[in-house]
Length: 280
Ligand SMILES: NC(=O)c1ccc[n+]([C@@H]2O[C@H](COP(=O)([O-])OP(=O)(O)OC[C@H]3O[C@@H](n4cnc5c(N)ncnc54)[C@H](OP(=O)(O)O)[C@@H]3O)[C@@H](O)[C@H]2O)c1
Image 1 (cartoon, rainbow, N blue to C red):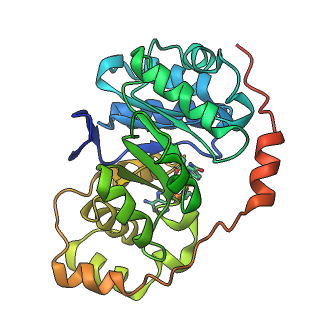
Image 2: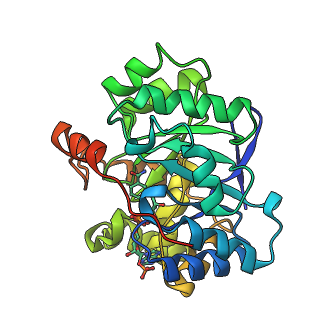
């Protein structure tokens, strides 16, 4: 495993397991199996409605809590709920998380960010992050934060490399954690000829080549999977290095095209939505 050093000195594994759209049973299984095979980074969110299952998966893995870098996210409907952080910790069954995000720049997101800063001061979050805060949102937040975030989680993959956003991140040493790192299962990305060529050269699958590209870009990746063979492959990417020339070839795929194109309307609907959390 390789590690990213955060702007507060903390270290985070550069590959983890993502749990978006995994049912509680699937999330529990994927997290347990991933940790058993050596993963040490787990990403979930209150909105995925699987935090309790993720907590169970961690316990069942037998891996000590302090060895796991656990990341979760507050949903906008909770930004003004002063108990939101404690409630998320309770669902996960932990006394702190390693990374706490606000999930969307929706609703009263500044109140949400203040909650992160408070949780950080109190040791309930060892690092903090913003998710989907691109463009005008990060521009406004950077004038208001008291503590700069350690991470931003945004859509990133070879078709969309967040070139503009990265200029702001570099100013503050904020690390990028890629969501949809494999294009959310889109076959056209995985089937790009350049990945087939590199896959043959290195004896790796196209997905492994894409994930290696992310880590060489300096990104942390959290591919989602309910398939144990994929989970195993996704962390097995550190025995080869793409050359500068190969990185340059992959860079040509950047079309500036996202898979997800939500705007203000979607953000308003996020602010209005209240997740129905798992019961104990
Ligand atoms: N902050 C946000 O707003 C946000 C939004 C979306 C996602 N996320 C986070 O980012 C994580 C990753 O995103 P994602 O899970 O939506 O998309 P993704 O990782 O790009 O793709 C997941 C898809 O790829 C397949 N896959 C995984 N490993 C593979 C492999 N080695 N070979 C072939 N196919 C493979 C999975 O199927 P199998 O199950 O069959 O392996 C699944 O269909 C999420 O789980 C979540 O933690 C955050």
